[in-house]
Length: 237
Image (cartoon, rainbow, N blue to C red; front, side, top):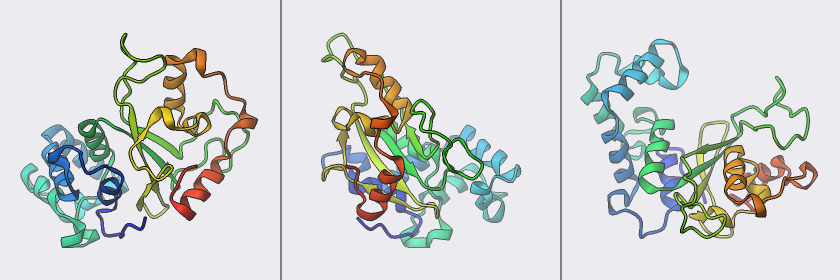
């Protein structure tokens, strides 16, 4: 599904993936922005200022437009939507925003990040097919709790579902649907797909060791094929 590059792309993509019967306080993109803005406490804002002072590119907006602003001014800026003010006049979703919404929605956010280099080479090309090596293109945000005593064998207690997003080299987010679904049970993902996110593979294997044998690298889906499918059809198969 196409998402406009207006500065709201993460929120729009997430909105497209979530069902209608979500938390009422997160019923649309503006409500999600409001939740994120409300989570910007003084510690987070101080971290923003420190990153801006250190020259971190993603926080350059703070030096350029709001270097002398108060904490409340920055929260007001975070409320701005790209749809209303333009992509250069709003706060793009960062890790704090994604983690905040992951926690509030009780979902794991899986990202296929084209901007990240392939692990193992300065050129970005993978040197081997070692399935144990984490690939920085596959980012997982959100914490998984171990199963409770009453959980079915191998079941995750919380969160048990995930959403998948694709992030382009231009930092543009798009929704990825799995078999037509946006909100996906983690247990429904094929083992070879889960294996792309190292933390997800490790947690899944830890709680279901008897039904999750070690993966043979030769049997894993080719990661480049997954990204190619995402770009063409915005689906993971």
